[in-house]
Each structure stands twice: as C-alpha cells, then as structure tokens.
Amino acid sequence: MDLRPPLHRRLTFAHWVAIDALVALLLAAALFSSAQVPRPHLGMPAAAGGGLALGIAATVAIRRWRPLVALVVALAASLVSAFFGFTKDPMVALALVMYMVAVARPPRVAIVALAVVEVAIVLGACFASPAVLSSDHPWDMTGEVVGTGVVQLAAWTVGVATRQARAYSQGLREQAERQAQVRVEQARRAISEERLRIARELHDAVAHSMSVIAVQAGVGHYVIATRPEEAAKALAAIETTSRAVLQEMRGLLGVLRDETPGEEGREVLPPVRGVADLPALAEQTTNAGVRVSLQVRGVPRALPPGVDLAAYRIVQEALTNVVRHAETDHGRVLVTYGEGDLEIEVTDDGLGADGYGGADDPIGFAGGHGLVGVRERVALYGGDFSAGPLPLRGFRVAVRIPTDAR
Image 1 (cartoon, rainbow, N blue to C red):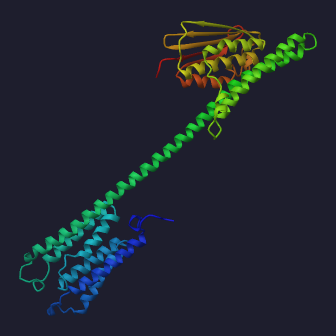
Image 2: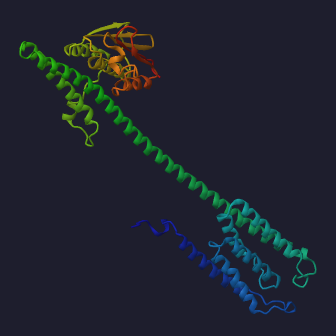
C-alpha cells in the first residue's frame, strides 16, 4: 500500500495519457472559440474548420503513443487551417507534439523533426497565395512566422532538456544500483574469504593436534603393558593437546554464529598465535615423538599480527608433515629475523620425497591442503615459498615473508 501523498506518487503512463486527453479537450475548445470564418473565395466550407480543430487537438491526445505520426498530422492540419484562415494561433498543438518528439525520440530524429517543421512553416508563408494574406506581400507575415518558429524551437528545447534530465536521473539510479550491487558482492566476497580463512585455521590447528594425539595414542597403546608410566605420559599429552585444540576450535567456530557472543563466548576465543609460541609448539611436537630443534637468528622484534600468525601456522603445518610423513624422530626449525623480512626453514632427515607423495609429487601437494595453504599464506604477503626433498635424505620447507608495512 502506497502511503505517499498523491502529488508525490509517480505518475503512470495511463495518468499521463489522461492528462493529454484533458489538454486536448481544452485546446479543442480554445480553437473552436477563436475560429474565424474562412474566406469565401477559397471554396472551403466553415464546417471544415471544426474538423481541422478536432484533428489538431487529437494529435495532443495521441502524442505519447505515436509522436511522429502526431507531429505529421499536427503540422499538416495546422498549415491547412492557417492557409484557409480558420485560425491564427502560433500552432500550440504542434509545439506540444514537438515537445514529446524531443523527449521520446533519439536526438537525430528530434533534430530532423525540428528542421522539417521550421522549413514547412517558412515555405507555407512564402508560397501562400496573396488571397490568403492581409496584403499582397508574403513578407508582411514575417512577425507571425518568426513567432511560430520560436514557439516550436522553445518546445523542442524544453523537450531536449527534459530528456537529458531524465537520462541523467536514470544514470544516477543505475549508478546507485551498481554501487549497491558492488557492496553486496563485496560483502559476499568478505564472507567467503572469512570462511576460507576459518577453514584454513581449522585445518592448521586440528591437523597438527590430531597428528600429535594419534602418535601419542599409538605410543600409549604400545607401552601400556610394559611401561605404564610412559602410557600415562602419553595420555596426559593427549589430554593437554585435545583441550587446547577444542578451545581453539570453539573460538574459530564462534565466528560463524549469528548471535553476538557474550561474556562466555569471549572467554573461549583462541589466543593469537605467533612466533613467540613456537617453543611451545616445538615442545608439543617433541612430546609426539619428533624431537624439534628450534633456533632463532637475528634480533626478535614485534611483527605485524598477520605475519606473526602466518609464521606460526607455517611452522605448525611443516612440523605436522614431519610427524605424518617423514618417519623420523628429529626435525629442525630455523627462524631468521632480517632487516625487512622473516625467513623460516623447517627441515628433517626422514624419507624425503618418498614420504611426501613420491617422485610424482615431490612438493607433497597430493597428500592434502597443508603445503598448498602454506604457499597461499606466503603469497598473501608477497613472500617466497619453496618446498622439496633434500639432496641425500630429508625434506625442506623454506619461506621468506616481508615484514615491512605495505
């Protein structure tokens, strides 16, 4: 239901046609009231003037349906009426139709229509018989011809201005719609990127922790009968790791909830990981059976949050691959702080290419999304990534991430 006041509602085509019909009736009445008696020597009956008046007025009523047809009829009827002396109006009906032609038709058509009308008015005055004129010289009608031509030009100019204003308004509306669509697409893209980020974080967090849990469970099962104390340590490591990963999963999945998290939700948000957490990660991996040697070179400094998290996740994924695929009990992590970058190198002395998919997949992409995610993280910050088997034995993952603000 439209609650706007009547004058603020958008008029439909039917409303405009009704307005044109009313204007046509008023114009017909005006033409009838101002009609003159035709000159007898021209042989035109007085009743013909009424028919011409109706024809001229009718063109205003149909100008929105057939503007060019209405223009031709109005021009012909107005010239005939003026020639036989029925009326001396400045062709107001023709001007109203000319306005609609300028509004509704392309610029070239509107220009041609104006030129034809102006030329027809001038020629009608020049070639009219002296009997039609008040004197023997056609040039005595110069004032009337100029006035009529100016009326047509004014109507055409207003029509062109109206068409341009409507085109401008339509352009603004289309631009606003495009901008709204762009905002919607940006929102959708942001949601998609956020979901991908969450999926990547879940993979990095869960994959490493579940690998540690699996290894500890295997150790506990193997030694539970002969060395119960070792089995107890394995179970304790499983409990600690599982609690940590559950806490991180709650925080990440909480982002997907529609409701605003309360105090309880804020308590379970996972801590922001970074290079400072690598010793704990190395200890966790060591508890899983792969001893990790962590070495830091250069002067440690505060890193951008995104780079800090990416560095942690890269080392986490690389160590997860060592636990899963290398079949070794030793891994090495080297973190180097450069002047404008951070270099990370994770190596092991395990199976090398055989443990990461074999010769057909030396980069290890066939086994899952881990190293693909590492490459994407590095590419996000414009860094360099390489991964592959070492010459004799083992595997190496090396990255360089710029740390300067960009």
